[in-house]
Length: 403
Image (cartoon, rainbow, N blue to C red; front, side):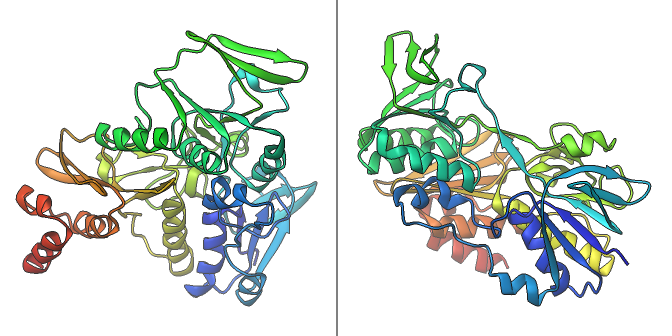
């Protein structure tokens, strides 16, 4: 018996490896990691890890957890999948599988004019973070290209370290793809309060190079000098291995509701998977979040261990720590057609509705609202506007009354 082979040891792959055993899977479990490091938490890399030269990565679980679960950990690069023989090629040798799980994640996008410069960075894994941290002592002026989660988290952290930070965002506001204008406005005010030079609607005219470094961004109002650049403009799914094997892909590896790909006995999960979503009327979505990856891993573990046929369905949620702001989002708001806003000096809650039904809630510094949002979204309930506007205590009482 060849058992389950998992390619990719991020949050999803690592979770699946131990969850299989917890669900009673008796066969071999092999976890293949391209890097030699024990699987680690990625969110702290843009914050606490950068701030201290003594900081070490936070492991997802100890070595003993894999040993106790009977997981075989292999390091190396998988270069091919043979669907007929049910093997993968790992550094030139064949590794057999009964079921194969692709948890290969995503890779950061890069701007063509910056790709070869030694002082240009992206931030996705430990190697990226270590390289950037090593460069920070010689970098006082930092440019952050991109006003999404990674860019803003890092910008706030660097400003707190005394760096002169400029954020360049092409959209009219930060977080435009994921958050309401009210949330963007609060985040922008916080960033500017940290001394960050925030430039939205940025229309760049290029870059000035000096040898193998970029020394200035060229814009409509002149030049912005820089010592270091972080590019945070999104990511693309790592689908090359699947495409080469003839597995159906779009923006990610396409799966059905059970996370099965177009190839027999091959599954996909996490950032690389493009999966039908109940909040998108069954359309396939690729969601990048730790929660989505770990929830899919737990679901697939039940499928592989017990033969369960249920489709994956959960309320997606996301978070980002930007300076003193904790942004939390439950549900998907991109198809909403109405929103309701509750705000005070310390907190913000934005409720998104689609045709009268609550579909998403985003909050700043309001964890009670966030947890209740996940609860009501999972139950498919929509509290009245007057209840939502009264706050978390009123929502909790309403939930208890209708339960």
